[in-house]
Amino acid sequence: MYARILGLAAFAACLAMPVFAAVALSDAAGSYTISPAGSSIRFTIGKAGGGGFDGAFARFKGTIRIDNSDVGRSAVNLTIYPESVGTGQGRIDAFLRSDAVFDAANSPEIKFRSTSVKRTSDTTALVTGQLTARGKTFAEKFTAELGGLKGGTIKFHVTGKVLRSRYGMDVGTPIYSNVVNFDMTLTGKRG
Image 1 (spheres, rainbow, N blue to C red):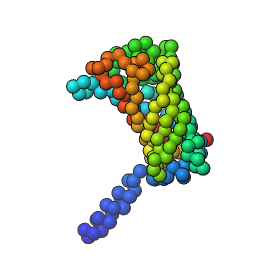
Image 2: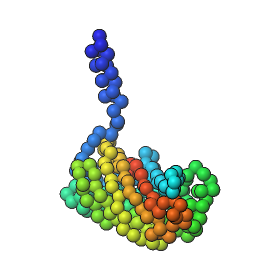
Image 3: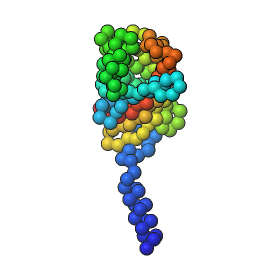
Image 4: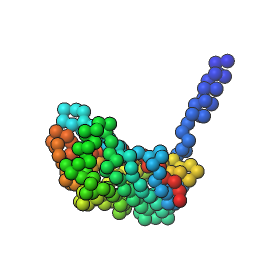
């Protein structure tokens, strides 16, 4: 009887497994349009002595192209709309949109265009590219991990660190960290 209960529990656990199966980058060749549904672009800025704040961008668009024959020819293009920033605190959101930080009125887009993609394992890659914000452009690196591929939908978990001072957004340093930690889920539909 006990073995039967364990067997049923194991079967139930299998049914609860994620919909996205683990796949290799080589299985994911193609072009994808990033879908807001299932995607998120979150960030965290630490504060001296602990704490800080986190937020997210509600509006963004982009494309991912995976070239199986030459991963280095793969490409990521992402546009973020800084007026869509949200922290859950209206005064902070307004301050972030102001000319002290994003200057969303005069710089309505933050753009990332990849310049190289280097496979680091079967499911991960280092994506290097040009990030442009407030009219300033610098090379930045992000780590992308393939989370799954099912029915023409691909999912990546992307992380990276950006120094905000490079883009003229260093207000509040050193009390607030100069390092912005990005944690993104990008879901793309094959197109």
